[in-house]
Image (cartoon, rainbow, N blue to C red; front, side, top):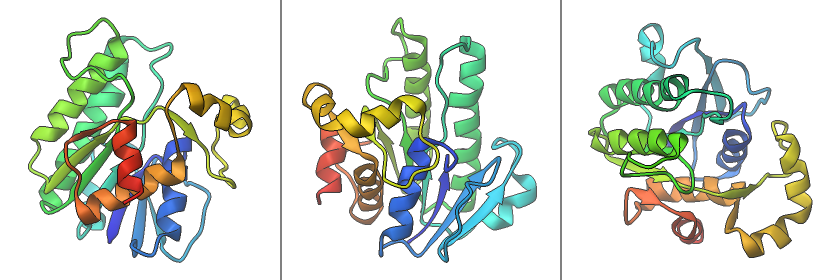
Length: 216
């Protein structure tokens, strides 16, 4: 498969990218980002863009792909709802709307988060906004849309873009995973690839669903 990946300069996207580059089912990866991911590989191309909502000048580079793994995102800490919505809803939907027009047979896999609010009515701002994004993506006419809701994630050895706290997670992951359901980022990437190849039973996948899909 040929796929587009966003978020390669972040922990989740980089972990998924590593799995994609090593997986024989993946032929090409186009990393779309605002800055270089700092990796080179025979399967990897990069496309640097300033604004995911305005892709007019690079549309020809985005045609002919089977899937998009949307791993870009940001914490809601320190952001009000308006600013968080621009990043988590407007930017995601702008990017996806362009891709579905250029690649209507594409499968779109979106990294959301555990406890996202599908009702869009809850008290947690970040959960409402993510729920709104999930719901809007499911309405787009892609071949398929899957919203992944991972929780605790174990980084892949060799990752460069790992948040400080996750360095400790690598060490104590076996203990934490007994309390908090978790996934290795390799498994998240493998589950995304399997979702494209084999499909998934529903549009919103929680941790057990992702684990089962990775093991397929």
